[in-house]
Length: 241
Image 1 (spheres, rainbow, N blue to C red):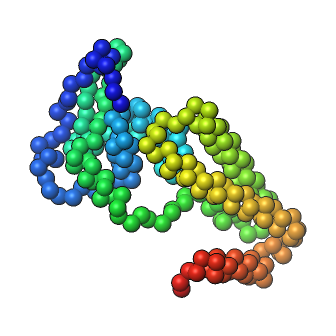
Image 2 (cartoon, one colour; image 1 turned 45 degrees about the horizontal axis):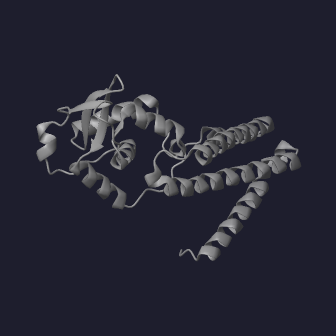
Image 3 (cartoon, rainbow, N blue to C red; image 1 turned 120 degrees about the horizontal axis):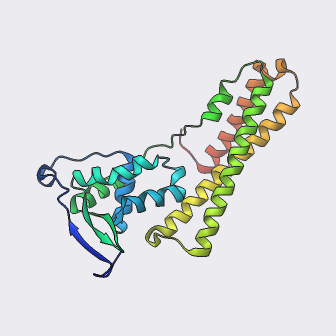
């Protein structure tokens, strides 16, 4: 990201403690820090730019974080010597841009080459569905409807965002294809969630009596359906036991 001398007169700040420059000890960061480090590696950016990008990008579904947490993280990276903070004025405004250091590039490369972790989903509406009263059919129906409406809103948000990308272009062209392919993962998850909603609506409508709905035989039938689906996936993808 280049700016003319008239637009921006920047001076490097002393943001790196002496110990951070000389320590050979491996630095471990949280996922938020690694994400921001990766974005900074693409081009120098301010904390405000990074926060706004993550608030508006599809990454917010994989990394939901509060604006304050995102905004404060670059300063912590600078204190560890992983990014360099450069402060000055641009177009009459004070700002601090962060650029990645050699130590930051090394830490990022090491993290990117490590095996990732399996997906972890914190889904409060699903948890409440799971724990809904055993004899409260309406509570189950309400949770299914809640999940459906949440998913509809997510569809609207993602649709509008991708539409903006197609009309105005993307901000970080360096990872544009990666982001577009990741959007396909998000759409696949949404389709799966709505397929589950449809299945539950049929089930709750069909089994009108609470006793029938909550019977052990009914539970075993549902488990058997899940086993058949999983068996198909095991066979299709030749998954070893």
